[in-house]
Length: 500
Image (cartoon, rainbow, N blue to C red; front, side, top):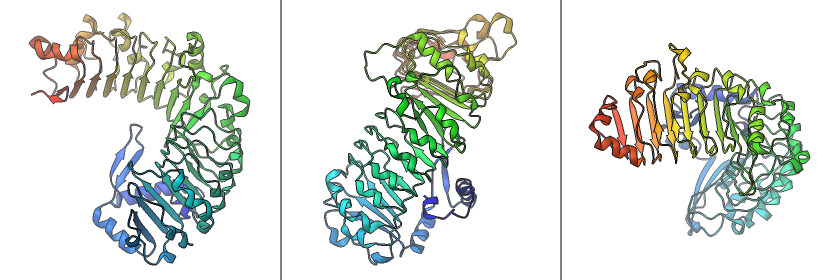
């Protein structure tokens, strides 16, 4: 948004300049209480109340916040001709958008705040159809969580628009071709528009587009081929692999090679519908050294009854080999039984691994010896896993002095329907070289798990959370011997209740 208003136009790399400015303002406590994501990116922050009030005072002639309710007489802002940045907060069951915003001919930013109880649908968007021409100087349009099914075609009249955000508009099915007339558009955010079926074929005309975010647009069958020609593109958060029959019409992983400015250091890159991948001879991801966080989503089959070949599925997983510098990896909806591709042993820098809803897998790879830098491991929804033992630790007889999971701090098991046994052999039960940095262990909705492994008593575990694990919870509560095995842990929470 700073870029869209021209605040960073003097910089050759406005994104880096913006990040630098943000850090300076944070150091000076302009921004506070930063929320950090699992991949150490900044998710949000706060501003001190006094500072916020002062900022509002300084910009009182340029910025307007209007509550849109039933009584519009009392909400009209004074001096509309001077307003540059306008925010409309829509009340539930509001009658219509006030026409006064179209009197603000010099408006640069328009934020329409739709709450969960607000219904900004197609019938309320009619006001835009005839009046977009009055917003000709608009640079930023923020229209999130609306109920509209289609963005008005008249949006093409906003030729100066640089930032368009329709995040979480869950009824949105189509972006009009006129979006491609926005030749100055730098940022297009359509995340969470789960019913969006297509993007305009002419998106190659958006020559100034730098950031395209489409994560959560589950109905998309592919991305337009023209995106491969957007040489200014810096951010693409999701790649949708098209079906074989339609591959020629959509963007491919190979096409991304042309985008020399793509950077992934500060964002998650997700590849959806991996099961459609055709070319498996060599990995296109191996060359992306800058890739930090990768999610491989194998879901997206249109027919629930479709059965995918296990060898075929594993071949796709092998072909999606990332660069060894990868730091965070997620694998979801994988339908194969083998979760051990050859390239996994080369991920020496991997810090986080999430394996989610891989329902055909019956066992886990020897992750304890494969991933020496791993700090967080999450296993979720592996329905066929019944037993976890030393194979996960990766310790064999010949590795008597080896350390398993040397840097692991957080471990989580969730929704493991058939998991019954978590065993540690006599060899691992008395070893201090198993998870020597473990701090937090979470086990949720694993109803058949009977007990915890004895090696936990030799770890520095600080927090143990057990929730909706009926058999395990009863065993710990009834057996003094079993509870003694974990009594050294400072914080134990069972079904929401902290034990003392």
